[in-house]
Image 1 (cartoon, rainbow, N blue to C red):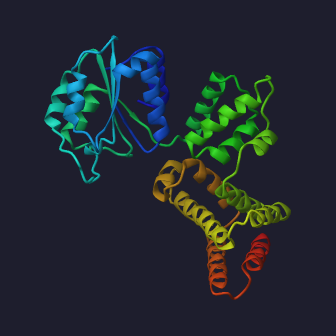
Image 2: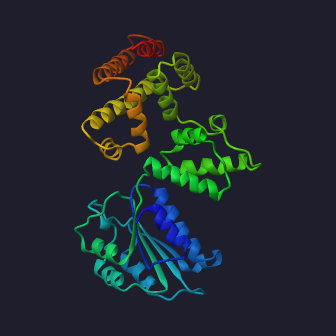
Length: 340
């Protein structure tokens, strides 16, 4: 089940006794668990009927035993099992011994009063394992991996409605550029923007520029984008700002090289017929970053990108060997790239 269908089921109070949540996007797992818990339990009931077990520390049979126990001062009990790496191919050094046969029996006939949520922060399960097959057959499962751009926009639109916030389309684009790769950060910034826009005004791109803090990686991304588009004045402004912020030139060069490497890899794989999602998986970056890299890559051919990477490697060598003062060497490099 996808995230949006999953949430709709919960909102309609269609709660199941067994859930399986897995994937690398911790925010989606946490958000899904929070929605289930808040739907079933009041704040007072949480103290008695909500338990969290770390499967790195506690054997599964302890959680199963509680799952079979009647709720205390309430109608339902929620048990959240995290770090269930026994569902994957990951070889964890287990501190505890899990009696999975006990859990398998529970899965076949879960307690009616208990909602058990099983989770692991790993993108794939070991589908060969009997227990994984049983969980998928008898429970509801959610694959919580990074959103594609369309899903990310849908999530922002939904969240926007929930907190009565209005963002211009350009503002959304800028917000995604700055925070879209981290759902926790995106949520935090949207909540802050809701306070700023509580008078009923519309949030503009300029507001995002002013209110949402930039990371070094964000500045590097815009620096590369300015270089790609031949915006010399903007590129140099960003560069001088980074220097004023005491950013190390060698680190800036490394991040520039990383971004151009992503552009080269994404462009190459795209020509080979890979989809954006497949490219993101291959080079281990967010799908949105792939989309931006492909757009930037249209302005270069493979030879030019290779030459840029070689230039940056030479700059890195010159800096580390003291051939030229670091800031000056990087400044000359940027001017050279702007005239590529």
